[in-house]
Image (tube, rainbow, N blue to C red; front, top):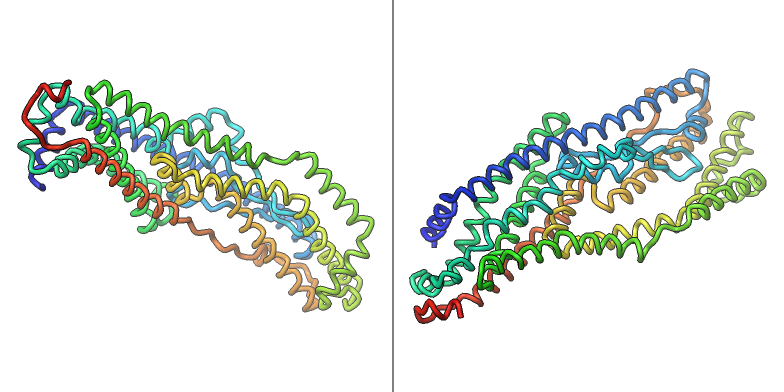
Length: 462
């Protein structure tokens, strides 16, 4: 078996087509990785600029004598979104997400649209990242090598003789599939590894070994799955042209139709609610806060008696406690006004995650995006992280007021530290299992077609 695999690999590598495909894939992977790293750095720099501007505003407020509670209520605290090293592999998705979120008491966290999102040129260039390369171009490269693995022998009438002298039909299928996958892997995996190392050095962040191995295993699994699928089509086709047309149809269905259909289904099933309704609800909440502020605060005092404004030691602290309790009441009503849009976003993200396991292309793109915090659920996770950060602001202000400490704070101790987000590795692990299941099914289908028989060339073309 080992000798058969070596012979098939050497036979395939002798062809100029295989060497050219491997070289082009290596160059394309390096280019896509470099472009993705550049775009990721642009997003991170935009987030750092927004954070620096927010810190400058906070510093000016503190210099004017504002208290931490006043800063948290009336001045935006900026929270950058997590963009790990592997975000460079799916940098095209970053334009659809927020780079930072503005957080302050009394209002739901607001995501600031990415600056690159407003640049058409960046949006076009950002699509050519490694995830896009592996999802769309990689299958075509594999098809170019695999479509005639068995169809060519069948069209020439040599397949029966080949099967008669092969150690076993199963071994021959595995050997030819492995040869195609090895040639493609020689072009893609080194480029992928160098791209991840280059991104880590350029972005100045450590590359976690578990994430890097998950990305490499996911890519290798996708290569073998596509190779097995196209070799199976070649085993069932009578002519190389027929195998090629069948492969193009499979590629169009798996790499184009299914992702677009899943996205359209998500939009139709869970459409965005009318933004005017949300805006009117927020405006109504603000009007009620102005009219019924006293009643709202009294209701909050029952939940937090330790923040009762009447227990303050002076008028300044009493006003600050009143503002904090009013912010809590108003935040709940603002969250209710945004409930419909938040639910629609979460449902679409859940549907997109389920639909991501329908084809090798979507499995790869979703797995890499999850490792890089750029998947459809990243927006929901970022909003949840911003809400948690807002709770830290509220807790910090409440502790100051409970201790009767209303003195002016310093920028050094504000805002509170944020817990960094961790990438989601489960989609990549699940994707690896599904890709190998696809590979096994394709190998079994090819083996079913290839059977030993009499050496009769005419039977192969009839």
